[in-house]
Length: 153
Length: 153
DNA sequence: ATATATGCAAAGCTTTTGCTGAAGA
DNA sequence: TCTTCAGCAAAAGCTTTGCATATAT
Image 1: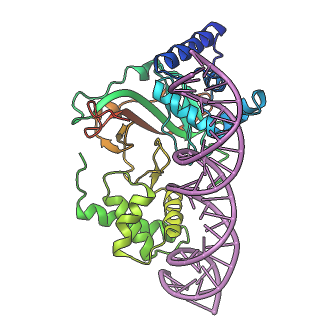
Image 2 (image 1 turned 90 degrees about the horizontal axis):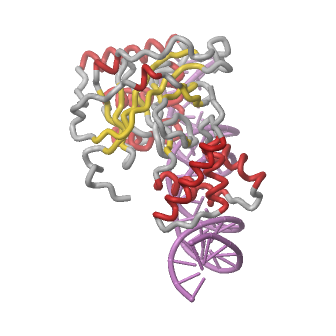
Image 3 (image 1 turned 180 degrees about the vertical axis):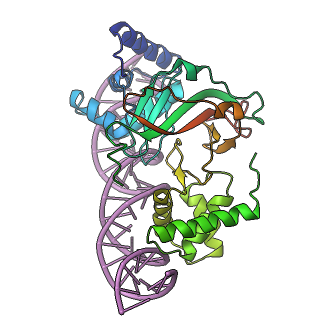
């Protein structure tokens, strides 16, 4: 389900980070590169803490403050999206093309769902002044690890 | 968009709260009644803080701790759902029948979207071990107050 | 009467902010 | 060289927990 990204694609995205930083008058720092790379390669929509655990080993000086600031900057640059999620942690998704999500109501995991049939879903024309930008379909339920048998709490 | 609930319906739901509490061996307290009533009547998917501001005036002794415990209990009873949302606040929805949401990426507001066409959306059969329970469609974009002109940030 | 719940205060997490030294362009 | 940034530490939200008292049944 979490298909690995090809090397070219990762590199293309990292170049895009460089371009957008330049356009925005922002520096391309090793921290931003490392954080964005980890996001691009992730298939699990990591929380800030999870991401920190992934990047920190390769860059021990990295601080959580920088991680948060970087996430905000990447969202601002349009390279990253914050996912609507339940629970107390934020979740991020660097996969910007249209896709959907399987959200476990028990453990909070979020997996990608590729479903061409769902891609055809369009919002109604009249949304009463709301300007639609993106449609995200969440299938809520129990992931393989949590249910239906493992329903504990 | 936020159609007012009829009195009967509200009363039916409050009776259902009583029933479920009894079944679960839980007491039906004034706090639970007041909190659930506020949730049933709300059309805006309130955060805990917003809900507190609504119930507290009618019940000044209410504590935030009780509010949080009650929200958890109502979710557990199946009378309330936590919405996937962006940002740092939780959002709750006591409207359990199928409907969808307009989520503002700028201010975080969440409005109901009634769209029969969207109700027909079904997840694929094979979800790789995931047990679907509920489909929620989020239309992300800018609400009337935030955009498209009002894009500031 | 007895189990369950409330409210308080304190603690726990996650996220944000101010500031200074460091580094990118 | 000049602006932007990383890291630190402290603060600020939001949510949870422990416990004593109060309440539902």
